[in-house]
Length: 119
Length: 112
Image: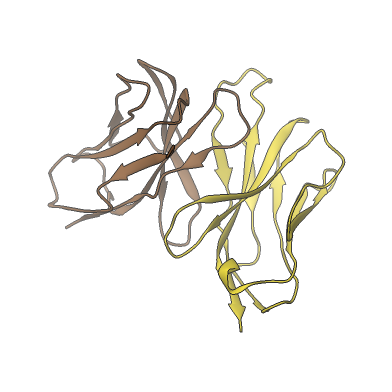
């Protein structure tokens, strides 16, 4: 079974600075998807960024980028020019492609990292 | 506006009562999911459905039941058999086989 580990329960960053959130995962599959979701105080889960394992290029979405190290099974999220609105719980998630025979497209989540942005 | 709605936002029930949480989507998504979130935990899958009239158990299905009679709707019933029902419940949907899931705003269920 796949597992996702976020080793930083809490992080803080100064406004306009850069912060990196860590995520490692365990899987025996070679093809899969990885995601970062943001959960602000409203508790709405919002997709931040996704990465396909077969792509070597790291995904980027505006101020958000990832460092995907497939061999190390590491998937960190970098937030540049942090803004007050970035304060939230961030979850790393894994999803099988399903091509291995499973039909379950569930997301397996880490326990989250609470990010505080200081003005 | 397309999206996923969950109602109500807050729900209170007495122990021993069954309660049904609503999830509706107008995104024309085939697949729908129910997750449970507890403090300090990530989300855990309760049930999922990939097509109408079909659904499968997730990791923590005991004490829950679902139905999928319409593509747009995937209600979750928390039965009295669920030992610790107080939690935040999130519904999600996705295009069949698509990468990401889109989430509703959630329902906070408190059972006393």
